[in-house]
Amino acid sequence: ANLWETFTADKCPSLADKPKVFVINACRGNKADKGHEFPRNRPVQKDCSNYKFKIPTHSDFVVAYSTMAGFYNYYNVERGSWFIVSLADMLKEVGKKDDWLSMFTRICQLVADLESQVPDNLTMDKCKQIPVIYSMLTKKIILDHDGEDRDFQAEEVQNRHLFGETVNIER
Image (cartoon, rainbow, N blue to C red; front, side, top):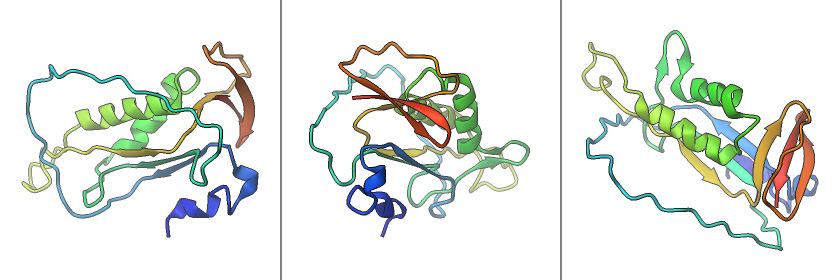
């Protein structure tokens, strides 16, 4: 069973249609990713949004893993986990402005840009890491710490409270 299955709409109706975010910072195996080099000029695809009127049982979840299944989770001995440090930095920088999926995409880029520095251990030296973000969201999540209204180009915006913070939810 998955950690989040306890919080699905059928098992926890009070959280139905509310965002639930799980952040899991842990090694998920013992593989080291040495990365691959290639030119950066690749085409970018635009994402399509799919709005539904019926709420699926497993909707409105974000599960963020610090690394791929089977791989190491790296950390800086002074600052901490690459993933958690990037998450904290992004929450401070754009947590009030960007939606969480955009923020997690930026976190993935920050972590992907890092490289381990362990010259005494060739297996662990010059390795890469990429977080994995599973999204089952049906709306955007934006934390608004100061109660300021957001101007969305959307049909409906609802304000809800999550852990004492206002969550602007775009339908």
